Length: 435
Image 1: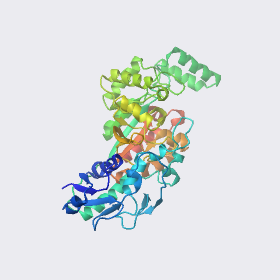
Image 2: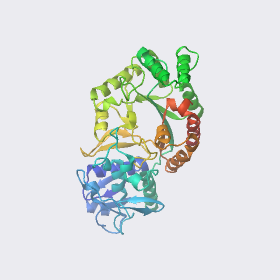
Image 3: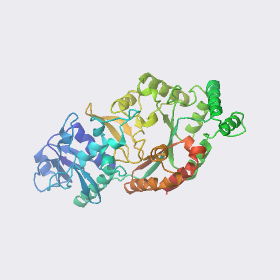
Image 4: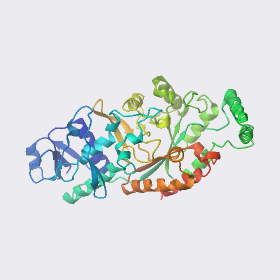
């Protein structure tokens, strides 16, 4: 028998949140009723979600958030509870001392990102503006932790309730912002690069570039064989996101028409999934995004359905609406550039809820937990310090059987100059994540 949930009103927010927690994470079937008589007479597993208990049933006090429309400033209470954090404190008679459903919706919908806030120089929502950063729970997949506690409670009350637990999974994602350091850049870019090196009297770089160009040395960013060999050794799932935007200040990959780049993309697609890495410029000019997706689709000779924003520029709801309009079904941009952790406080894929339109969408969000550039450039870590931050995140995801998604770049595996030692960090990450 499916779980029956009594509530006074069924709203899009309510349906979305209960589907996320009960169906997608806990793996049980449920249905709603607004009939007190039906609820009272139901002999199977059930609970009420409203502002007052009907009888002696399992009762969850409902915060108003899931019954509202529009975006309003929320008074969010936060307190310690059973070894973790809780939001939206409720009523003493409630099964939990907080509204687990409202709290989960607030975090996964990214409600706070619709409220007035400061944005950084790349027009990104800053981690420092988030409740998770301010209250020190950015490193916790709270929604998954709460769902696990909810499942235990339901099974203790209804032992016959059928649930299907998720399995832990590691997904390695790699962004190809710059396929090669020296080769295939064209005459003008190559001449300009030589001039800059000579102007700085950097003769080592001049020599390295020359050797790569005449074939005496492998281009340092050409780390693809290593990536494939590591994937075959540990048998993990991987996805490549390819930047195909036209050359610009923040878009510096090889030209999308370059034959060698196209061959590389096809090679990678033989071993892993491939998605689009929308250019920096495409955030302001939608036609560019459409062109880039079309170019990649033609190279692969199949539809492109996966995406991750270049520079992680994510503006809700506009960015996700653009992706939906171009038939993207899965996005991997949910994370911060300057801090490791869980931006939406969840480590399983979930559907984007458009708060402006008050509806769930078909775009599936895959949150990542850590990025190489975050550790090196923003957190200023040395390579031998990185695993101290990565390992606890992996452990948190394993505890709740979530998806641990890492974000790396081909260039950070090069051992070239500033990236010396980071190839070993990636190896250690893979070993720990696959253990």
